[in-house]
Length: 69
Image (cartoon, rainbow, N blue to C red; front, top):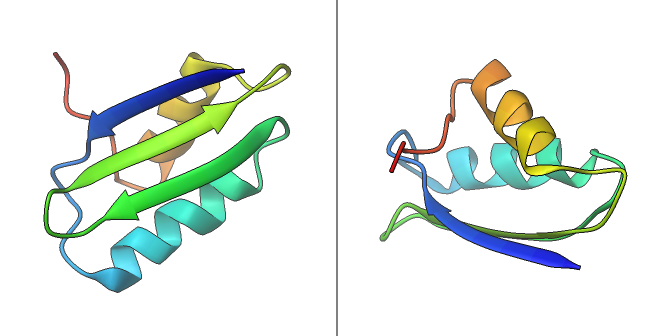
């Protein structure tokens, strides 16, 4: 299982966090999603068939793209 923690600058409220949790939770292979409004940090645990590229694409579609390192 892979685990990534990353910043999503567009998180502004609990509704944003819930949207992220809902959308990523629908991706096959995503096991857990945690989004913290105050820090704008998201943690995702996933296995195949989910991939980091699929997670980024899903977040970008809903206007919550991860901050680029």
